[in-house]
Length: 186
Picture 1 (cartoon, rainbow, N blue to C red):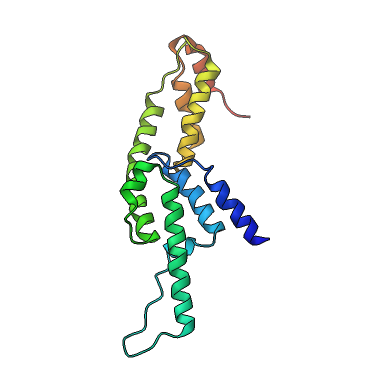
Picture 2: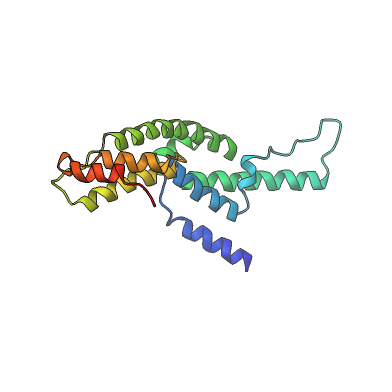
């Protein structure tokens, strides 16, 4: 029964979106879930069991643990690589272990994530609501930007968000803006 669910999960894996160099956080969470389900995610944080020194012989149990770790590392690395577009696969295919692969992806794309945070803040700050488009469409765009803030674990005080959105209203809404800003909560 458990073997069937892992087999189903592996076959459905191909339906997951390939990582193409953007939305790393989302892809990373999905990949971590898959690797956890396959029970191989531990190889990213657990070093390979050490071989005994030359004077000692490897026991059967030590050999089993080492071979299991090597097999799980191979499966983990293969699934991570399979979750990438062909261009990224070609770049990362020579990683020696799943941990090395994961660390190099994390280093590269989390650094880019920091610059995307700056981009998000800039988008939010420079967003202006215009009279030329439906207000709800524009409000939904702002909500989408704020949703991306949450995705990146960027939290802004609610009163700052509300005040910022009010400030983004067009000049023709001057009286309404004034009413909203000075209205007290009951």
